[in-house]
Image (tube, rainbow, N blue to C red; front, side, top):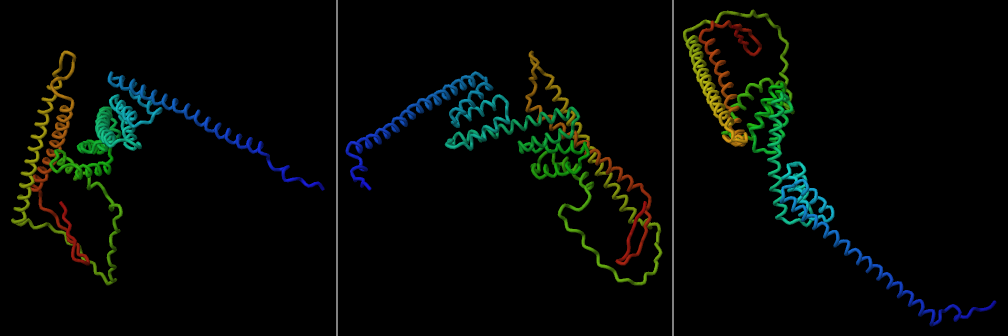
Length: 370
């Protein structure tokens, strides 16, 4: 067997030099490729930044010209190219002024959670979110009035509640929702709505009296134990004993002078209270009718272009709300007053009552029959 010499497998000086030179060339090739890619990437990034900046300038020009729809589209395109919070804020502000309130609120909220956004821009977005919600609540209120005018009271009630949810400062809208819920026969919902109003509204609010009066009428209609209430305790069983039948005694109540005087006194008191409530209700309604006439006169004053000049839109809404409240309060007070006067007349002129006495294990049951 021939031995292979060590020199046959070892590279010579020329081979080692070639290998070293090859590795160096490969390294330089990699460096060259990376440098080329970086050089190509930098112009591409610069081109995107330039395009986004140019697009945002065009959007600003459209914004200044009042073309908020185009301005919003351009700001959104610029944000897709270069996601700067300023471009997103421009799109939100454009949607806000264009009247697309739901989109504006969504974009403002996205601005507040963007990374690297400045606190000043977050504060601006939050302030505009509050403005948008107020504007959306006014929009819902107009829709509620429209649906109410068309006779869709159930939808109108829901829209009044939606408007209140967007702007809790307008707690008076709950009373409007409650009235409509009463009209469609949803008493449980009306009770919950009135209770929410009484809880959230100031004690001096003009609708407090109406809410309390309506709730007093509706609440007794709610039957059954409250949710989560404990069942009534069972009465202890009585021992079985011999029971002797006891006759029921029925006789006329003796109309003593003292009892008759108390009855007449109660009648006079009820008549007097009813009269006061009736007169108060008439006064409330008359004042509201007078204010309504004045408002209609103000709405009739218009300029040459047909625009109303006698009163602003906000003032007209406020006055109309006050008029509606006054008329409703007057009707309720008048109705309660008439009922009280009827009760007073019955107490004053009524006949003596019949009394039935039924002995029981605990004493006796007293039943009066008129």
